[in-house]
Every structure is written in structure tokens, then in C-alpha cells.
Length: 322
Image 1 (cartoon, rainbow, N blue to C red):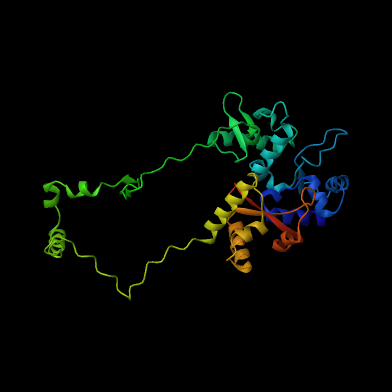
Image 2 (cartoon, rainbow, N blue to C red):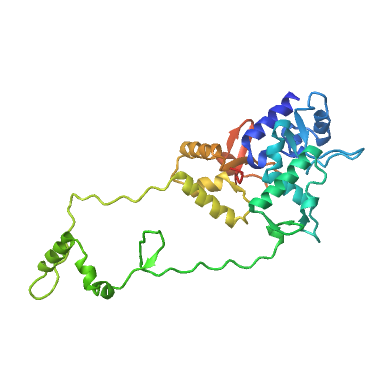
């Protein structure tokens, strides 16, 4: 139990897709078989401290791949998490019926978790808030489905704004008037100008030559310093790189640290890691290890990873529970 609790605590600190882990994943992290881990969690020392998301009925044991293991104190937070919603939808959906009724989603959960999860679903609908991977058909019987199961129209191209725009006080871009239109301002408007503005206009007129050609503007001083472009923060650059790499990879919200480091080659590793730690503390991103089942890591991917609590973290995921 001490080892299991230690692993759970480390996964809790990682957050995101790392916590709560499935029973299968927890067994992998502790180097045991799911049956052995499940038996250890049924010990009296675990009761009241650790919960399984799915209740075992009779001889039927919880499925290791769809049962979450969580600390009892986190029941309410897990009930409201995207992770539980995605897992329950994945478990309930069928190939010929990918949309699942709200009433079906809490089925199979531990009674206390089931009640909290149903209340969280109703709150999501009221707030119109779901993960990016999931859509909902609202109505008397709301239906939840994965966006990947839906046939969606191609994204419409953004409207093109006019080439010349003038700033407006309300923040909306407005086309600027042609030069001729500006010169044809009403006499009343010209008269309303301040004396300083009229004097400046007169001085400009006197600056023209006798043949009517205007003098070129004065050359900038050699001592003048050009205005520096505003610096782009690491967070903005990281967001942009993650979005682009995730889109290219299919939008699964999983990008390798190696790819992100390569996208920001001018950022030293120590600075990169420190800035990423700050983003994790802000609950904007989480890091996950590779279980090695679906992808054999290359040496470069391992070298780009971050070792933490005995885990080599190589994947980055964007969090939606900030």
C-alpha cells in the first residue's frame, strides 16, 4: 500500500491524463499485474483512502482498462473532470450507436461517484462546457458523442478585411477614407480644428517649393533608435507551437517534448524546462510518460524527456480544467 499510495500521489501531481490512472496503468507503474493491484486495493488499509471508479458486482471484477483508481479526497474533482467523461463515453459507446444518452453515462460507477458525475454532467449542459473531443445534442434526452465520430463540414475560410483599415475607438476596424476624401473635408470640420493644427498645416504649405512640389520629409536622425518589436512571451510561442504540432498530428492533444523543443530551438533547455514548469503550475499543460505499448520511443525522444518521480515524461497535453 505505501508504494501504491506513493505512485498515486505522483500521478496526482502530474495531473492531466496522468490522474487518476486506470487500474491497468497503475499496475504497469508498480510493475504488477492488474489482478494483484486490485487485490492490494481491496485490503483494509486501502479502504477509505483509495477508491475504484467502477464497483465490482458479485464475481464480476472491474475492467482494468476502464476503471480509474483515485484517492478518496478527490471524488468530487474526478466527477467533474474531462478524463472521467471521456472514459465513460468510450466505455458506453458502440460502433453502430456512437451517441450515448446522458442517463447511460454514469452506469457502472461507484454509487457516490455516479451521483456526483451525473450532477457534473447536468452542470456542464447548463454551462455549455464540454471537452474539445466531445459534442452534445441537447434536448429532452441529451446525447453525448465524440467529435471524431461525427461528419463535420469543412471549416469556412475567414472573411478578408480591406487592405487599409483605420483604428477606431471602439476597437472595430474601419476602412480608411481615400486621400481625396480626406482632403475634401467640410469647411466646418476644418474650422473646428485647433489653432495649433491650423498653424501646422500652414507651416507645411509654406514648406512647398515655388513650383508646387512638396519638400521630402526630413531624414531621420542618426541618433534615432528604431522602435523595438514587442517581445513574444514563451507561453505564447509554446501555445502556438503546441497548437500547430497537435493539429498536424491529428488533434489528439498529445505532442512530444522532442517536437516542442525542436519548434523553439532558440530557447535553452534549462529555460524551456523552467518556463514549462510555470505553465504546469498554472494548470495549462500536463506531462505524461510513455507506456511503450503503442509507440517505441527513439533515443532522441528519451533525451528530450523530463525525469520526474521515477517517470520519464515525454508527452505534453493541454489541460482544460484550469
